[in-house]
Length: 193
Image (cartoon, rainbow, N blue to C red):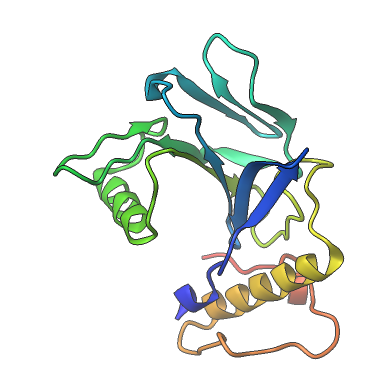
């Protein structure tokens, strides 16, 4: 049932008529999707994730993205992937998070395949420091969601929280009348464990 409350579409950050990245979020993560330029060897791409900063680029060149994040992230749970090739019977992943167990790796590859993952996309997963916090953009001061879109995100995250805390119920068709509470702080905050 929780998958019914997953992001239905991503948001795009457009600058000077060019798409910089797409992004979406869950209660715990913000995902950024950056289309990579063609004809550049995958091993030349790099991504550095700090608690309040992200840098993406091609080694030996100025960074493509070099921005402060809208909110802090947990770097030990954040990671990036690129060049997932599910064709030809093999996997080719340049992955900066080898500390994860093979079962998680297989789950990530399966999810990517199911979602039609392209091999020219860098996928950055930022693990939110504060679970349930609604982000209006991954990047501080850039690509802010308009008030209506931000409200829809907050409502979806609040329903995700209800679903997580009450797994026997289906909140996928639930609606809020009036203002939606903050999923991070509602009723004393998110319960852990």
